[in-house]
Length: 359
Image 1 (cartoon, rainbow, N blue to C red):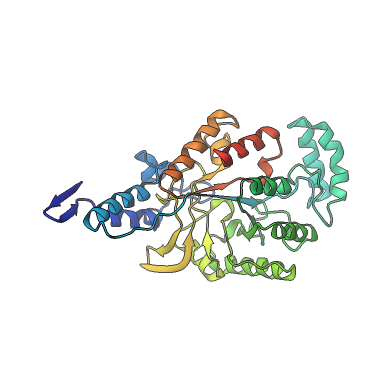
Image 2 (cartoon, rainbow, N blue to C red):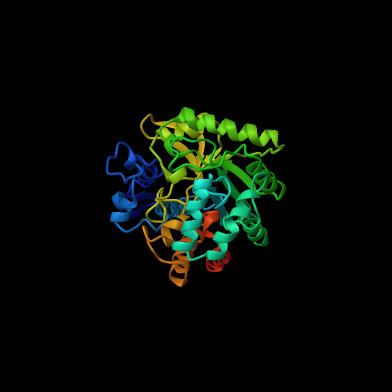
């Protein structure tokens, strides 16, 4: 792979070309082998088919290049980033009972009894619902936000919470309005505790840069009304829907600093080949953008859910998360994790989450 002739090193692979192909997601342009949500699935990717999806292969390639550079110019000091953990939470459903119509409330209560066998929760639901008009009720099972922030603070992590600010497909979008008093109160609490607020563009925005920008304005305006100011704004697409390059321009048009969508829903790993943040690039126009890509390494559902890897909430799932985290640590990258507030209501889920944070 590497040949030395006198004082010259020859690398017999186009490492930079391969890196550009992975980072720009050129592979995904114009693809039609998509899932029911219009997403490019892991199983269609070159990385999955050839067994390197769970390796930060671009980082490995660049580490080889760095070794060659240091041998050729030993006096040259190369920057060495530090391993970090980034945790974020898509706020799809901030409350099980709040923000529901009477009919939806009754439907949820029936599910509590018939599917989840939680009779006590069903009996408490009307009271929780009636007292959720101005703030999230502390007894609502999905109101895990204070617990999340306390866990992050114990481990010196800043959590990012991404809010849906529009409705483009009601069946898949949030029932809440970001301007609702209870959501405003939640965002104030997040900001007061030093955590981050971000955007979670609604279901049908991924091909519509103008709507992403419009929803971003709603978020920024609402935060400004609540006295919330941040140096950096970013977020993630709802349902991880993404189309290269259209979605890039939505974030760019919105003036957001970063996007953290890029992982596969059906399998965790390194969709972009890296666990380092990097500048976005439009592979169609051959154009660099101001936006930065913050690759997502794992969404909890990808590992836990029966429709994806179905590893459960025990040791097998923990082993997978630790493996991915160790791969990030090995290249001094960022282990970027998405964990929904709705999957932290039970003790087993919380124990798994904390083990992932501390591993």
